[in-house]
Amino acid sequence: MKRRLLPVTLGAVALTLALGITPGTAAPQPDGPTLSQPGQKAAATYAAPDRSTWTAKPGPLPAGLDATAPADDVIPVVAERLYELGADRGFTRQETDYPGRAITVLWKGTPPADVTAYAGSRPYGVTVTIRTGAKYSRAEAEAARTQLLNHPAATRLGITWSELNADGSGVTVGVAARTRAAVDPLPELRNAARIPDVALKLGVERVAGDALLSRGNDAPPWKGGIRTVHGGSLCSTGFAVLAGSTGKLLSASHCDRSGNLAVRDGAGQTIAPGGASVATIDSIDSMLIDPSDSPATTPRIFRGGHSSTSTSLVKSWYSNWPGDPVCSSGASTGEHCGTVYDDSDVYVDENGVRVGVIQVAAPAGQIMAGQGDSGGPMFKTVSGGVQARGILISADITAGPMTYSCGSVAPDASGIKCSRWVNYVPISSVLNTWGVSLEVG
Image 1: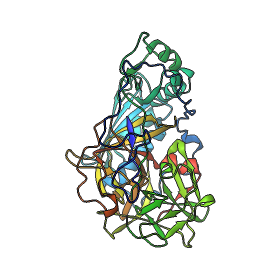
Image 2: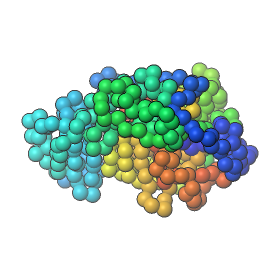
Image 3: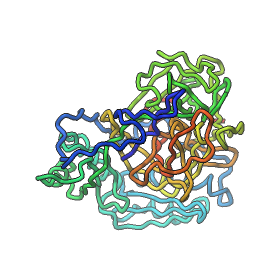
Image 4: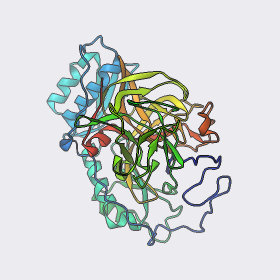
């Protein structure tokens, strides 16, 4: 189950879950759960990302790249090119190795000559290894999943989660039920996907509950990683973006499901009055805030601890791949870094909305984020600043529970839970769905 970093109610230590279960009490478990859930809300249509329609493109390309440039600068560029060359021609997955200045690519069939030529050229000094043997390309597996998720069986059987298998062997879906009841659903699921390779994972429950937390007292022009207050809840800002020439701020839509509340910083200053100045898109769990002040935004994010005053310049954005080193920077717990472990999961929230996410884990014993860091920036460091990678939305408790000690947290975040494993929406999905560009410097 992928759980949002739950909302924190101002003036109260207790966290209130949307299911009405008071923290500290056990959630009731139904006897003999079944796959059929006829009373549940119909899920929204799932649409796989279509890069051919993107208006915002990765980049800009750092100046002066060559074989002596840092791996942090060149590997995203090479990975992007490998995907562009192979997206519809057998590409299945790739994994980056920054310390080794290398990328390993999984392919279906024989890679085209231009792909092998590019890999063999050791672009910018990056060693590219292509391994074959995948049964499905990324495009084929994604198409099968899209058909499955949009089939009536997906709602009737209660699919709550899905992923493209890392070895290119097919698709795995999850349901909340812990038994297969009287009928094995796999034949129907495989028929819906139009491929025979669909596996089932039991006991993956829907996301239940939302969460908001955030960094102190900023001032215009507004930055990423600051505290925001939405009614009685707390969140964080992500990156500054441009709608034409107008600067706006990203956050998470679950910070304010109404998309109507005023947005204030941690000291109570109004960032946006609400109403038309706040918009949300639930399919990417994204909020777009139009600040009242001018200049409204600046291409910088806060770095360091929750009380830090240090910021970094946002230089560019690129796609996410397993193996990438990525950091979060929310206002409740500050900056934490880890490694991407999956780039293909889709989960279903409590409203039936399907959200595609990237997943990153901190080293053992450390955290990636806590409740109320939601909406904050996900990034990797590059020369001269940071590279945008996504917007933080939730903990991934299929990987492990939110039981990690948070360490030092912002005063208004007392009593929160934290996680080593988190989900974030890729910045590509956010920019291209909104039709905005990243503000860079």
